[in-house]
Each structure stands twice: as structure tokens, then as C-alpha cells.
Image (cartoon, rainbow, N blue to C red; front, side, top):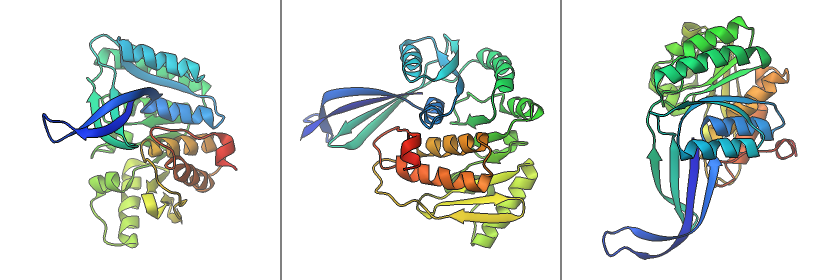
Length: 290
């Protein structure tokens, strides 16, 4: 995704409708979606390859330029029938006033070609990470998980939707509270949550489930054990992309050989640091370990 920001001054209300008039004084473009996940891995010091599908349009060319300028290696499948996803945010007085989304789902032929590219690339990498935004880019995720596990690679998934069966066989999934409730239902207590999480983990054949809980921190369900870390308290400026930073950090720490429980601590701290930044943001290694 391409994240665009139009920043401006708000000095009056429109005479045409009860809405603020934003006089745009600045524009900015950032890598969004899975591209932001890849960039977070890169800024933290890891090597990363991004596989994704885009249109054959101006936003796709801007994405390619931004990826190259930040040193992120990418293989982008181009589909002329697809509209590259753009999220345009209008900012006034340091507040988001409006978000406009442009998107059209990718063609299945392009996704089939990306599956071949994935099978080639998986051999050269230590960890595989899937960021699902529910936009159609992971139509073949089950086949990709199978290929990654056959290659002996840990698989992390940031899930979306109410059907997690397509993530079966992954190493760990990282839903937030609302996402997990959509799948297992509302829980009445921590014990009830643990039962539901273990049942889902067993049904999907997962090694672990990491629940991100905003101000409540994170809880890791691994084997029969449960471990939690409190939130890394920071003044929150913007939660946009915080989940991207969390799973990118978790994946990089697993690639470095850390156990999941230790990796969770670093990912939790990363999430707490990045929400203090405006918009879609990243962290450096130095910031994370300062």
C-alpha cells in the first residue's frame, strides 16, 4: 500500500457543508501495508524481500521508488486490471480529518505467478512473514505456508477475517483482541481466554498464538504455557501501523534465534515506541535497544 498524507491548515468551515476547509501546505508519501512491515525489518537491521501484487499505475511506480530508496528488495507482481492500494489521509491541526482509500483486488493470475516467486525466495530466507490486510493479496496463503514449512522455515501471520483455517500449519499468529474475538468469541475471564486460545491453536496446528492487547500488553500462548508482558507505556500519538512494527520485530528476533517469549518482549517494546510517532512509522535498532 502507498500511504499519502496531505497536511494543511484549518481556518474556517466550508459554506457548502458543515465540514472544515483544509488549505494543503504539504504532502508526504510513505510505505504502507506489507511494505511498511518490510521497511521495519530493514530499519531494525535485517535483510528482507517483499513479495506483493500492485497495479500498473502511478502509485505502483511510487512504491517501487520508495522501496528502492529505503533499500528494501522487492518483487512486485503487476496487474493492469488492479488498482494499487492508496490510503490518502488529510491532516489538519495535527489531527486526521479524513481517510480516502483507493483499491481494487488483484487478478488471480498475478497471484499464481507470485506463488512461483515465493517458492524460489523461501529457500534464501530464515523466516516467512504474512501480513494479511484482507485485500486479496493472500489468496494462496495455505499453499505458501505449506511450502515454507516444507522448507523448514518458521511462519508468522498477522491475520484478518473470521476464518483462520487458511493459516493452519503456521508457527505463530498475532491477532489483536478484536480480531481474536471475531474468531473465538468473547471471553469471560483470563482462564476462559486461555481455553479458547489453546483450542484454536490445536485446531490450526500452531506452535503459538500471540495476542496483542494494546494498553494491556501482550499474552503468548505456547504449548500449555501462558506468559504475558505489560504494555510499554508511552504517550500515544498515532497507532497507525503499530501491528506492522510488532510482527516485523517478532520475525526478526526469531530469525536471530531468540525463543518466542524473549522475542515477545522486544516486539512489545517496539510497539510501545512506534505509537509515539506520527503516521506509518518505523524504528531503528538503536531506538529499540537504547
